[in-house]
Image: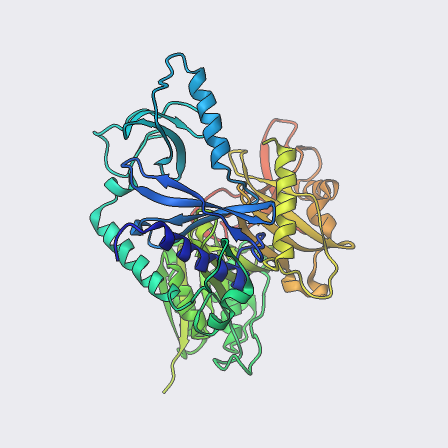
Length: 391
Length: 163
């Protein structure tokens, strides 16, 4: 597979991704059913190669947003972003850019080509060229002139309002990794076939339904009584923290309850050295590992607990798939985790949505079940896993 | 965008997330969304928005969104058990919050207007009230539902330092 993609391939991949979105109903606030994918606008890298296409999505005459679809494998996945409620009208932007150019005191008017450029991805600009060479570049909307790049700076570390090229500056190893991921992703997408159409691609649940059985789109799991989740109910209980500082005790209580070791929160607090109901205290960071020790001890070593540092999302998914809850430490607070959801899709320019089902003992004496906590917006310090020793 | 414009955007986004099924209220509880409340970071900037969901006098859930409208979390109080739902006034009525802080702070100090913020982590929403004693000493109080305590600072302790 080449690093750069032909426009027809870009649109085919984008259409499959958006149909999958629609099929999985995984884009909150954006209904794609019946939407038509327009040809879109080529967005160039400063080197002059096409980086991605910005594709408006319309339902009849109504704009329902746009999608950015990669034209280069360095992104790792084809669908870069979707923007519900936003409109994209390249012609209108270019008209505004021409007007801004005319207002410049020393307007270079001898151009023969106009391009949209990701001058500092994802920031856009309008580039005016003559004979293939840039005469001026204006930042989209502000219409400020984008200065040439500073060649003395470190790659991939542009300053504010400084142009940089993803294609030139991304390290080779990262590009190769991204290319491999892109290829793998495309191989999976190729299992879904789009019907031949005329007059543009329409997104519809009917389009990809036959392929549903072989595509995992939106992966969601939570805890059950046993690993036989098909015939066993969801099984996990919330415990509110009984003092303002006993989130650790409440989190340990939830996990021990799941394994039928029923202790009062006060007893768990005693084990962890968290004081009493009348004189409680939290757990100093230096004693984080006491949680693992307490889980072992309070289950008479039937549970083997392990502390993980800065756990990735995959650590949570692996445990939940094995039907095991975790304790999650974030700065200053502790909760337990009983499920997850994840999509392969890239939403609103971020990474694909990854969410945790959090049984949070906060607020005191009440607690909340959070469905879902956005994994990419939270700092995770520690996780504690526990598994039952079996013969 | 000004604050009222942001509020309107948050309200619209929450409605979309509810309609799409991404937010799920507990079944059988006819909760309605209230006005978005700004959650302030310790430096005073808006960290996020909290949208409460109430049913009659009870607080059922809240949604927390970033200023860019990304969903941060959707939390159902007490796991959705009706008997575990806290009184909405404890969280949403500033006079009730001030009365609870006044009871903890004792007679004498002047209390500031409650500010919605968080204790240690943005998931631990609290109302912060400063009390100013006649001698000028200022203390910070946190209120979360019926719980009120004095801010003990930012030591590296999960849960918090001894109260």
